[in-house]
Image (cartoon, rainbow, N blue to C red):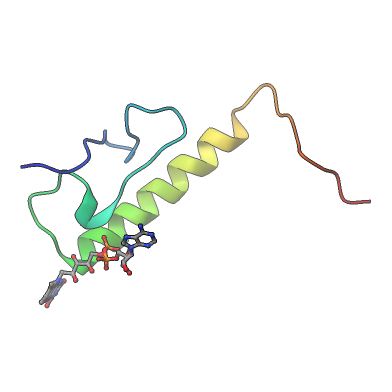
Length: 62
Ligand SMILES: Cc1cc2nc3c(=O)[nH]c(=O)nc-3n(C[C@H](O)[C@H](O)[C@H](O)COP(=O)(O)OP(=O)(O)OC[C@H]3O[C@@H](n4cnc5c(N)ncnc54)[C@H](O)[C@@H]3O)c2cc1C
């Protein structure tokens, strides 16, 4: 099938990297599939960011 391999959460085997749409291993390259992938990835990324135990920020707005 080709493309970047992702799991059900659109996550690749590289930590903190997701892939969606035509670039991933989807059998059907359609706009609605890409949009759906994007929704799944966004929710997955939100979960990922909010589950981090240690966060090192680059700056803090005062
Ligand atoms: C001729 C044609 C007709 C189609 N008709 C339909 C249809 O009727 N219905 C339907 O549902 N789907 C249709 N599709 C499929 C649909 O267009 C795709 O499935 C959808 O656009 C995939 O979205 P995407 O965001 O994954 O990729 P894309 O829409 O391809 O977006 C990828 C973006 O990344 C940009 N990019 C690439 N490389 C880089 C880089 N190095 N740095 C920064 N940006 C980069 C590209 O310029 C592009 O804007 C059609 C496709 C084609 C080619």
